[in-house]
Image 1 (cartoon, rainbow, N blue to C red):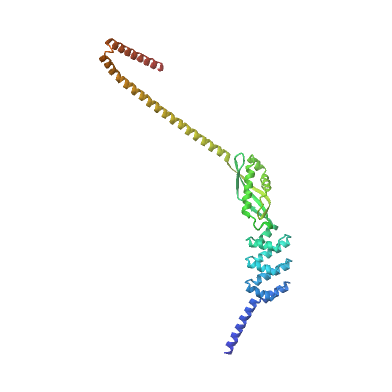
Image 2: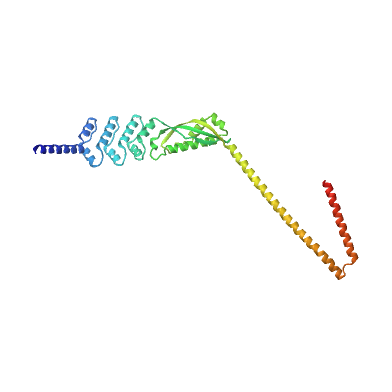
Length: 325
């Protein structure tokens, strides 16, 4: 029984010691002490209640002290509680200090809380980054399509990281500048002979304004010749003109057919009136005989006139046919 009680006591002491060392991290305090960081055990103990890991804060203070970057414990705790990455911010501050880049603590924490990697931004300020643009298609004034690819060398602008536009905006502006510069060229041959013309025109536009980067250079990596857009447009225009002309010709043909039909209808109407009049002639002659207005001799003269007219029409028809033959 005594051995069981002793074992239980040992277990209890071990658990108690573990709890004490957890809330009072003596090892961290000693590491800070030998590194020249002044922080009390009470502060380390209170960090546990403030839900701040003492190890993160102590390691950040040690790194800053060894690099000669002054840091404040309260500021580090506040940044951690705000959801920031303390270690990343301290790495960035140390790198900026070694590279002689001005980076205040408040700006570094603001960049970190804005969702950007502040340490990567400092590295990009020291070592510029090359961004390859996707193929950009543009058409010169002579109608020849050109497909250009560019390499954009950028450096992070620390002051513009908060609220500045990202890589997508830079690529979009560079693409727009390439299209504008090629489109203003009178010939695609001039662009192929002097591709640096595109770089100069694009750089003069100040495309990095309002972005988180500073454009150092724009180099045209490749230019390919695409389609002859001008010739294609001319072909399409000619085809459209042909269709319009055909439509107008069809319209005129339809109008001519309609006019012909109208004339035929009028001719048929005239013939009908003539036939109707011819039908009334015998009735009129009979009426004239009946009323005594027409004698036999008058009627015979009328028949002779009709016979002469018929003979003349026959002779005229034969002459016309002979001329046609």
